[in-house]
Image (cartoon, rainbow, N blue to C red; front, side, top):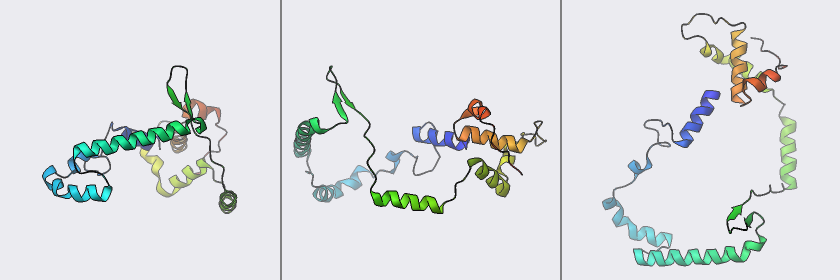
Length: 181
């Protein structure tokens, strides 16, 4: 789990990529050439409601920006999340959570009634029981591990890093029942 969490983080930041993957490839390579786009420009602009030439486009965008700015200026006193400090720097605070509708609260409670509570360690142990994934963490040489109860320790290590508790925090909470494999 720790490996997959790290890979996902690296993919999101762009530090690594999957060669040939559509989601993480260079989007510029996927764009149409300008000579293919130009005949479609008038129809696109008409459908989008924007002008087809640069001068009118800039004028329309500037008007929209001014209109939106005025709306926000008028709403500023009522926006609790927006504060302007003594130096004139705007600060946007996190929004407060919306109150749930009574129907949503009822539905969440009904779903919880139908779903049994699960222990993450039990899930890890059960998934290993059916797939034997923890054996992939053994020594590269293929020989038996030199630690006691290696499978349990591999599962516990995945729990520690997968939950981002780390080894120190996990060791403080080692009253977790061990896996029976």
